[in-house]
Image 1 (cartoon, rainbow, N blue to C red):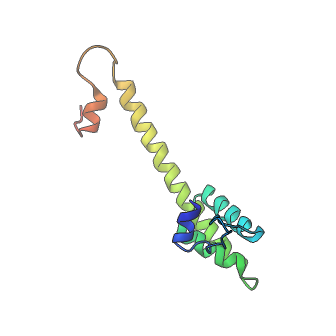
Image 2: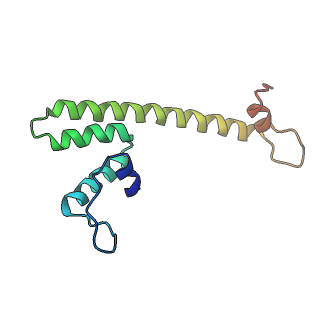
Image 3: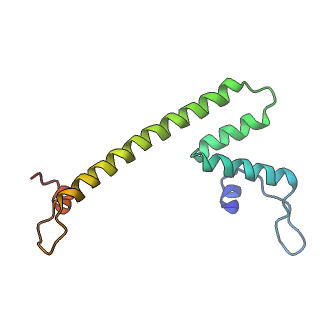
Length: 116
């Protein structure tokens, strides 16, 4: 991922040692931790880019950061609701299926869009 972050210019390319190994400094490690934490919270790359800009801007408004966080939380809520609905549908289909040797299967019929 680090090479990818360099390629998309989310992090600057670090200097290289004599053998060609990348030499990351403390500020690079802080930046990588920031990116990892943002990814863990579900932020996409472009929003992480915005957050990095805000992180480095000492004149930033915390309301800008809060707006990004709340928008991400709303999106995660929508995704969570969708996952709950998908699980409920799968559970309904599984409960309607006898799970025996017969070929009739409400799960397959449901996936095919056939209503019984």
